[in-house]
Amino acid sequence: MEFGARDAKTEYDVVVVGAGVAGLNCAVHLPEEMRVLVVCKGGLKESDSYLAQGGICVQRDRADFRSYFEDTMRAGHFENNPETVKCMIEHSRETIDELLSIGVRFARNDDGSLAYTREGAHSRPRIVFHKDCTGKEITARLLERAQRKQNVTFLPHTTMLDLLTDGNSCLGVVLRGNRTGKIYAVRAGNTVLATGGVGGLFRHSTNYRILTGDGVAAALRHGIAVDHLNYVQIHPTTLYTGGRGRRFLISESVRGEGARLINGKGKRFVDELLPRDVVTEAIFREMQKEGSKFVRLDLSTVAGGNETIARHFPGIVKRCREEGFDVFREPVPVVPAQHYFMGGVRSDLSGRTTMPHLFAVGETCCNGVHGRNRLASNSLLESVIFAKRAAEEIAACGCAEGNAAFDAARYENYRRLAEEDKKRVLKEIKGETQ
Ligand code: SIN
Image (cartoon, rainbow, N blue to C red; front, side):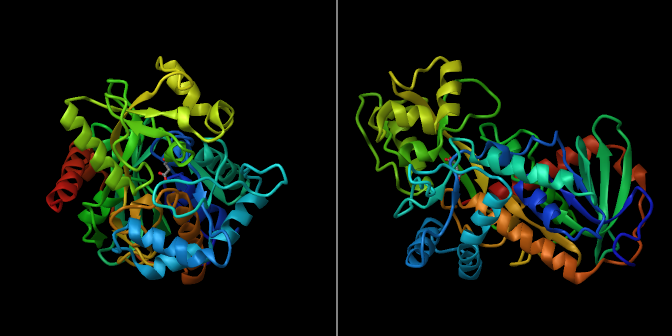
């Protein structure tokens, strides 16, 4: 079938499930002739990409390749796929240029050059940023871009219940309108899973609660390969408020700019710029030793002082103030929380999964770029680059043809199915953990 030849409302050339940076950048780069549907579980701005604070990495110059490569591999305990890491780094500069060309604003030095910040396990500053809301800045621009495309339709507040397959190829998705309750099939020549991570399955996470590993659950159900489901990243510093719900991140770039972690006696107990997993472990040890529910982050040592704090971290200052903490006067209580999922649906350098015409991008996929522990600020970059590559592959590979039976009755008890999915994914996450 020709691209764009599908006429019914429930037939598309491509359906993208998820509207974070990965889903959006894929939609942006799909050819205009393709009819594209972007589905997301919450509102269009309810993705973790919007919450990313620190920044997005870039290879500073030619000489930086080796150091950036080694930092990524070392943070990932050398379990990364070197080929994917190489591909990401090699495409990093053109990716930042592309983001600038669509209007993304990154912080600049007085001479107009890009400013770079630093986070844990980076041997030099190589992260470009927009205040403390880089993810929002990038995702908002990509969303605008995708919304301007005539060939892209958005369907928010819609949950993917299942993949539609003929047992061999992916032929679309089964959806449920969260508000209408309507369950229906959308047939598509290619399907892209960009459903984000698994934080909604954890009691304490920086993620939106709706992110419950739906892409992984669908893959498990259909025997599609998944990798390293036990590779879950805990972020060392989220604001401790004692409450429930989503944890507020205190960006690692705060430590990159000089903030110190201290215990109840006001003593520093770890090098704050070690890889995330190492810092997290040190915090848990300290909490256990002291019998406390948190440690503290002292911003008084940030280079550039209050002026830097106010300019670089306005969102963090504001949120801490709302919770009753003045970062200019006192150390703030912080505690580790689930943050990122390095495992996921196995995908190659073009986002292909083990099922023909099914792609996986962003946090949903495991292309090996992060290894066992992700290097800070590699996630936005990885998502943007490999989503674009998936779009290019889809444009080249053509659409699946075939028929898949759809029986809406199978999904009537969708709540039970969702509970079973959550249990299955959690079991896999925990089952493999040492
Ligand atoms: C942070 O700002 O600490 C989070 C950035 C990331 O997850 O890479």
